[in-house]
Length: 166
Image 1: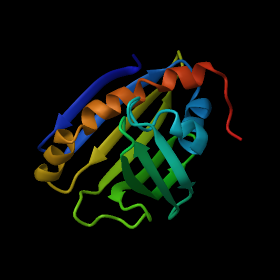
Image 2 (image 1 turned 135 degrees about the horizontal axis):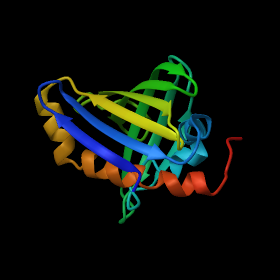
Image 3 (image 1 turned 90 degrees about the vertical axis):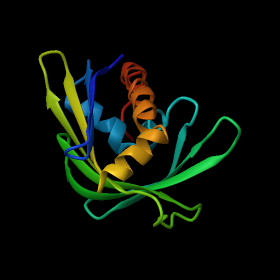
Image 4 (image 1 turned 90 degrees about the horizontal axis):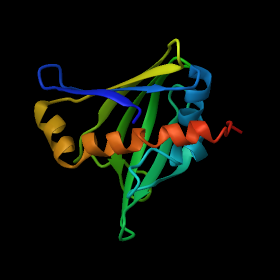
């Protein structure tokens, strides 16, 4: 599995995942940049994602939904805060309705992704920040930690297939 560590930090209100890949940062960046590749891993295997919009520029927005095993849909959105390809991506991530209108009753996380070259490929660190311990615990209870572990575990296969961003 690609994930080498996870850490839930209640004091700093963060959930961190560190993964390593046998590909250079430029290639790993493509699994974030290309919506068709992003769809192959963003949701866990039983909740695959579909991106209806994906504007990975500062201030840009993305709209997606994940489809559950019984056909149910969970909608979400991103707002890109900062981008420095192929090294860094920062975005807000939240829940929405089917029209991509944010659900103000649900938590919004700020996620920062960094890609660092290693002697064997890339180390990707993803840190999600929460507004409160209650929001952190709510999303963990909803399966965020386990879902991200499963989702990140799908990236190796995408990198191995040699696909490139279009």
